[in-house]
Image 1: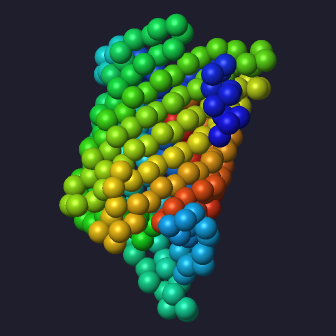
Image 2: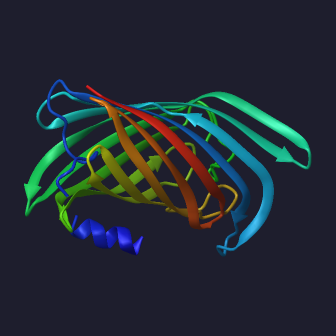
Image 3: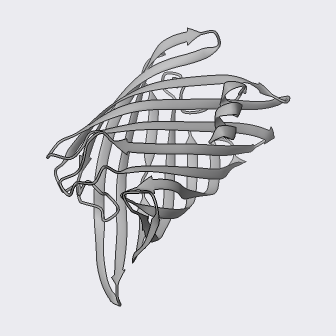
Length: 258
């Protein structure tokens, strides 16, 4: 995380998700992820054994430039998960959530671009890796401050996007805060490297008395294969947590810009 923060303060002339899209243009990203977990963090942050849990998720994400300042965003997700409890398998699959929002550009100051992004999520199913026990019909409302910057890093085009969010969750689930940092660099034509620090914490305890938090690091490579078309491959790994599972995730995605 320290390296990502250090790079982001000096980060390049590339593009990331913190800037408005030009009116009439858009981007569609279709990721397929495979997550595994065989351990969880207890209340003191130590890892403990847990029944093996796996989840495959397909979650298309889209952005569309409506005006020079307003970019619409949306996401839908389908997942299939399995819990292996001493040889007994418990399986679920189906649509899990629909998310909609917009990013409004506030402006640029000292080379740094600022935006706000309200988001709403309707949950269509629960998830075994959610310590707040989210159920079908639950709703999240999120307000995000987005800070983005383009510069040069050692002569390489690069950028950073930093998000700080507060998330309201109904049905007695604890509200959350989220702080994510994305650093991207384009060391060669058609190649973009991404490093992310993803951090979430509950603001109060769950019904079970847990006050969870998690931190993950993600690395991926995005390769342009044709005009407007790219593929991404990467991984994500939990690095700390409390009352949360320790996740390891492989990611493959197709990007389409139009």
